[in-house]
Image (cartoon, rainbow, N blue to C red; front, side, top):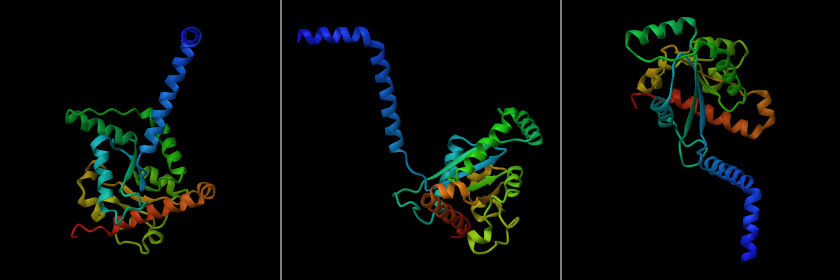
Amino acid sequence: MKKFLKWLDNFWYHYKWVTIVSVFVAVVVIIGVVQISGREESDVKLAFFGPAVIAGEQQHNIEAAFEQIMSSDYNNDGKKNIALTSFAYYDDEQYKEKQKEALENDMLFVYDPSTRNDTITQFNALIGTGDTLICLLDEYIYNELSGRGAFETLENLLGYEPELARDDYSVYLKDTDFGKYYNAFDILPDDTILCMCKISENTFFSNKTASKKNYERSEQMFCDIFAFSSED
């Protein structure tokens, strides 16, 4: 026992900091693994890009609205789970208007216009993964992506083109019964565009099975949006 204690004392003297750092790293890794394994998989992921800051309860309410109209648990894991990623983006005119509104109503408004390019890059990167297909967009970014042929046609998704269509690929969210019914969307601009992206070819061929399942779930969500009626 004395030999062991002597060895332990000698080991601690020479390797104390190595041991401390190693234990710290191990704990961080274990916590990360536990958090990842315990995280619920989303049935569908959505993205918002436009002049609105969505966080906390507002984000939860929007996600809950989509979850409530899901016709089924798309991934069959026993839970309906929607995940929204939001990107606040104000052009010069929107920025000035929001500043004026905040001043008149004694509200806090914080936005750094110098981050615009980074926001666009981050949004494009998210869409490029093919993991997030249903979008709620400002007209600026919608036109940018539409010019690249990024969106599915409403007819391909729904089997018909609804009367409220603003073009072949999109509608204004607040023109739908769904958008009108849930006040969770009051935080969004009235001209927020609802649309769905095509699968990126690069993503599709890198993981064909996963991409196909993700597309099918997103397509079902899109159809459920249009199937919703406030009269039901």
